Image (cartoon, rainbow, N blue to C red):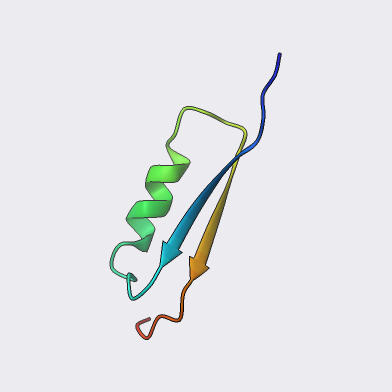
Length: 46
């Protein structure tokens, strides 16, 4: 069975208040062959 890896890319700019929710959403997907990449785009927050 063909099961390609899917990349979920989450760009973040001053989004520290939302990053945990975004990652949790990606982790709860039903497709299991995935990778999650979080990219900090020069944020000035935490």
